[in-house]
Image (cartoon, rainbow, N blue to C red):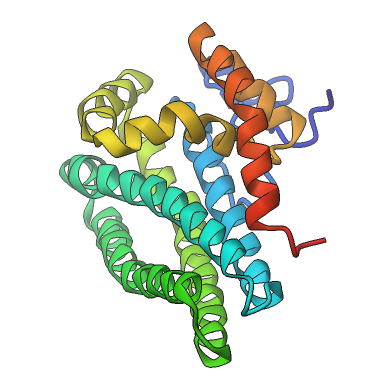
Length: 254
C-alpha cells in the first residue's frame, strides 16, 4: 500500500508536534485542512457522492430508453444514494452548522450560511433527478431521458462546488473551533440518532459496501482501521450482492 492519497506530515511539521492526525486526501477532494479532528469519514462520504453522481450521469446517457429493468435498477440505486446524502446533510444542518455558528466569528458565519444555502440549491435538483428515474423506470421517452441527464450534470456540478467549498472553508472552521472529542459527541448526538429504520436497513445491507466502493487503498485501509469487527463481517457478507446490483444498474458503462 502506498501513501499517495494520505497527507503525511514531514519531520518538524506542526501536525506532528501537536499530535494531530494525518488527514486523508482522496481523488477529487479539494482540500484536507490540518487540525485536531480526524475528518476521514467526511472525506469518505464526499468521495462516494462524487463517484455516484459521475456514474449516474454517464449511465443515464448510455442506458437505452426501452430497457425498463435497468432503469428500475438505477431508480433503486438512486434511492440508496439519496438516503445517504439526505442523512448526511440533515446531520450538518441540525447539528454541525449551528454548533459552529456559536463558536466562530463573523467571517466563519458567512461561510456556514453559504453551506446551508447550498444545501437548499442542491435538494430540488436531486428531487427532480429522482422523479426522472421513476418516470424512465415506468416507461418514458427520449425527452425525459435528456432532461434527466441535464439535471444529473447540474446536480454533479452543484454538489461538487458545495463539497469543495466545505472541504476548503467549512472544515477549516471545524479544525479551528472543535476538538476530536467535540466531533465524536456531535456524531453521537446528531448523526447516528437520525437514522431512520429504512436507512438502518440500507446501512446493514448496502451502506458499508457503498462507502468502500472504488476507494483507493489508503482510503480503504483508513476505513477498515476505524471500523468495528462486526462492520468487517457485514462488508464480507454484503459486498457480493452489492457488486451484482451495481453491475445490473450500471451495465451500460464500460
